[in-house]
Amino acid sequence: MAASGCTIQTNRVKNRIVYRIDVTGDIDHKRLGVVIHSKGRVVAVEEIDKSETVKAVDMQHIPPGILSISVVDKKTKEPLAERLVFVRGNGEGRCALTPDRTSYSRRQKVFLALDLTDAAGRPLAGNFSMAVTDASTVV
Image 1: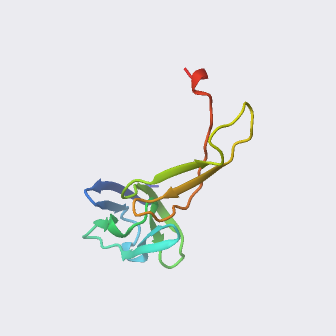
Image 2: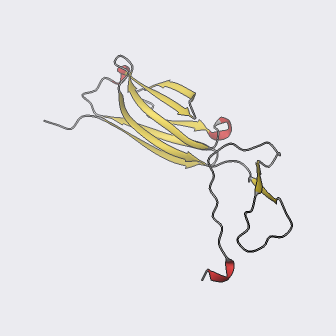
């Protein structure tokens, strides 16, 4: 029995994500569709055209994070292939740490206010972690 299925290849070209879908001959391409989503928001829904298997998504309107490109069976809604692509953010975030005091004694509790914003000064959402160490003990 011959192999059956589909594959997705991706490549970043300038400000676009170019993707190629290959489907084995035993699968009716008319039953398939492409769903592209990021952070719970559908970016695009497209048909698979046998003559045009290479398409592109403009990254300008895609938020930073994980972009999912999925091939699905339109009748059964079953996914047949998925490719995840990391989309970098535009600009750098800024971090400001503000201590509650100007100096501390040994082993005194430290309270810090952490302010994370994007380049435009808007608050950033996410999960963050921080580690504190004594610089003199780190090699």
